[in-house]
Length: 148
Image (cartoon, rainbow, N blue to C red):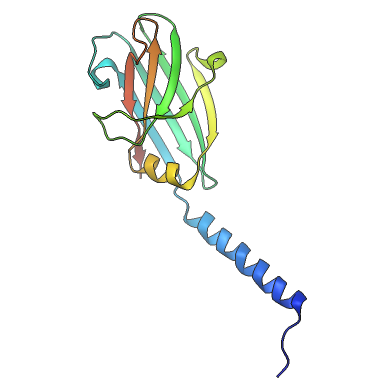
């Protein structure tokens, strides 16, 4: 029996690798995500007239696109951060820090997520916080929910 040559083996390995990538990509979760932001969701909760709404999409390549609107804050936003992983009522570290030049409402953004971030995001373990000078730890917050 004749053994395949090195070129044939390399071709088979490349084909199997690409097939594995395609099947992983096809099973990558996609969908719409959203959050309503207010001071009551801060930990601890704060009194604020501020409110906001986040609408986002996650595509099969792990690209997160978002639109964020907010109003009635105590002053201009000083930071906007996606944080996680954490359930509602818990705090976590910064995952995405929106650039200072893009803090005015309404705003749009995009980020490439890794597999762990995607799992936490679709597991509803991300939240978004908008901070102001009066509330440097955050004036409004919203837990991001994945619409399955």
